[in-house]
Length: 422
Ligand code: AMP
Ligand code: GLY
Image (cartoon, rainbow, N blue to C red):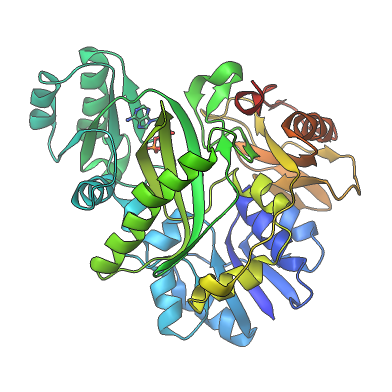
């Protein structure tokens, strides 16, 4: 079978690498991919405009692609799954309607309330004046969120009225997030510890994946600006057996059933971003895709086939599918470009020391391959991912792997995993 993975990040390198390990898989194409997917065994990159759904369709038909896996949110929210499925191309990912869970914060918050899913109090606004008025009624800190997709940057935590006013002004009046800021959610600030809960969902069936936690802040000790994620580890001790049950019963099943009731049953990876405090959970957000960087440490622990898992989901046979994990722990450390998550430089040549240890994997993210060299091509450049007998061991191995990579301006957090170790 041939597979097409859509996307170019560390998540997509991990997805493609995992698919390529399957003996039933002849070849994996990644569109557009990165230097890592270019160099991977049995994997190659192809390039089309992701807005041109018909070119993806044509390629899939000519190459007889047996499965398309869509990595990032934008093509999902744009309806790529619906389009490909309507052309009888087997595609793993939610429909445009179901992807609204990530595509619109107002949609998801209203959905949570309708289906009794625990979440922070909020109000949604489509104009500056009313949103400012509301600030007089609430306590601070508060959280202001652009409604639409904003590449992980649309959430602003405001300590006081002035900061909130400034945030609303930049979203509504200066269009800081373009049309993604045509609506805004103003939300109660929640305290606690965050965890990511990711599952494969197929209509009325769920297989939870191994638990994980990412580190969103750019600096050690979870300080500084929020990023897409500076590292992640699996399993996440904060998700105890009790919390796991609670998440399934209070969040995942109600969401799955709510989507069926809305006429938009879910297919794909479903990611709940949660805040956990004193044994209680609240949903911060839903993502309609696998997490990045959570995918990298989670897939390193997956012993069974990802392709079979996706196919079982497409055929709605998850109830008879058994997923297998290694008991080892994993840790992934993101190596980023100086300046990220603000402006940074690209096109820096990278030197990589090869390793052949199967407990270690250097996933590429923002890289490209040009004239025989690997160059940086993004904010998050690599995710050095490793297994270990416990989290501490996995962390040590991941940091050893980080030492195999060098480029000008490379930086990484030195404490990925600390929350799980303490
Ligand atoms: P989101 O994209 O909604 O997950 O928000 C991104 C990040 O902002 C989350 O991972 C949290 O760190 C933070 N955040 C979002 N909503 C809240 C909230 N209501 N209270 C506290 N922190 C939040
Ligand atoms: N790691 C956070 C995300 O994938 O959105």
